Length: 284
Ligand code: NAD
Image 1 (cartoon, rainbow, N blue to C red):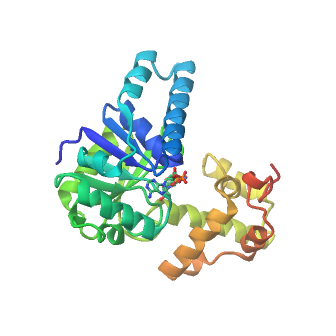
Image 2 (cartoon, rainbow, N blue to C red):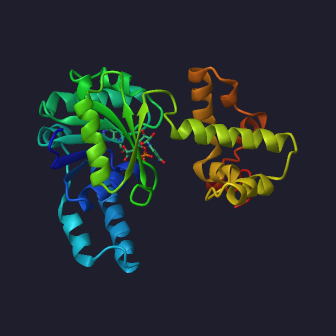
């Protein structure tokens, strides 16, 4: 298993800044890269704010906050940051072409021992790995938002991922204080496949008048102890985001379970995208 001390996070957005946060808090030296220096600054400021909130709530000691912040460095030059890293975690937008390009550049600069991880939520880890000269060192590390609060990392084993690489990813996940699961490189991995199936079935039940949105959600919160019902969760994720994932899984898995229900298509076409637009399955 590779010794990991220095980590580069590529993409300082919603997920990247969260990953950098937990890595620095866990004692890794973390370089934070993004295409824009403004995005790096914004990401670092968001980490500082999250750590401050932790201190206010008594969850983070002030010296832990200070030590975590001291382990974070802005890295405007991707190649320079990758060259000094044992692990690079990519969290750029969900485009295969973009991720392949970023991996090609990281591969050209990172030392041979370095493990390259992607936080993709739907793309094939194997296809991303094929853009590099070291597919055996490439693995999926799928975090959840907000990263510093969500306990899971889904570790995705690509077709070429070496055992040693998988063990490194598992060890890093545990060092970050997360629970890990290992999933084969299939569309939707474990989390999206199950979560989206539940959400789509809830929509079909709503369409068929089985129960109201509130009662379908209460069936799962009260009957199955889910922290949130599937329709309310869809409102938070965004109906457009869910529709795109459903389309992708429907095409890739060729299963009618993932055929997007009419009600979902209609609401998206009407711009009722959930909490972000004020209305989805609920009014916000
Ligand atoms: P985001 O848009 O918040 O952040 C992406 C960041 O990448 C931006 O700051 C952008 O400037 C930067 N970027 C764009 N091109 C770049 C490049 N060539 N090099 C370096 N940086 C670049 O996106 P996000 O929500 O953080 O998603 C990132 C990845 O994480 C995606 O693959 C997404 O599917 C996955 N993911 C997202 C969530 C979620 O809930 N948001 C959950 C799990 C996984």
